[in-house]
Image (cartoon, rainbow, N blue to C red; front, side, top):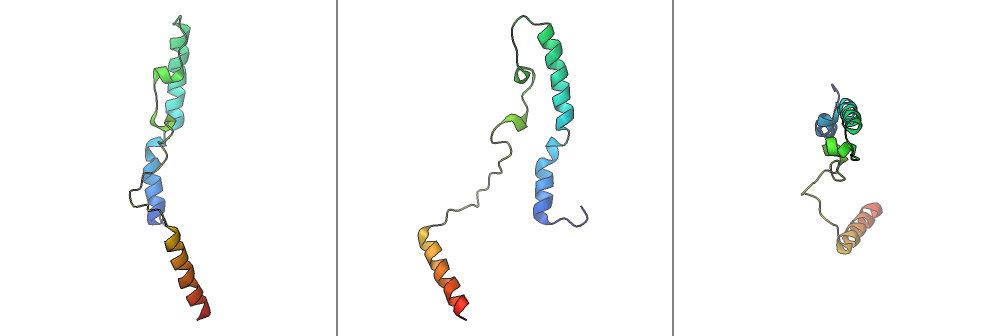
Length: 87
């Protein structure tokens, strides 16, 4: 981490809650096995405990500063790049 850039540090901080994922999954599996053996109905591991990383959108970073680029902008940028190539 001595030579990290800002975006690398953001990724590390974003994924920090998932560092003990294997331990949590193991604990849930153990609890599931004990609960299933003592239960007459079928249960799932998510019935025991549902984790944040099991959600579909958990790993998607929501960025409000993302804009869609229009075809007008694309054409304008192509014209600008053609001018710079000519110089």
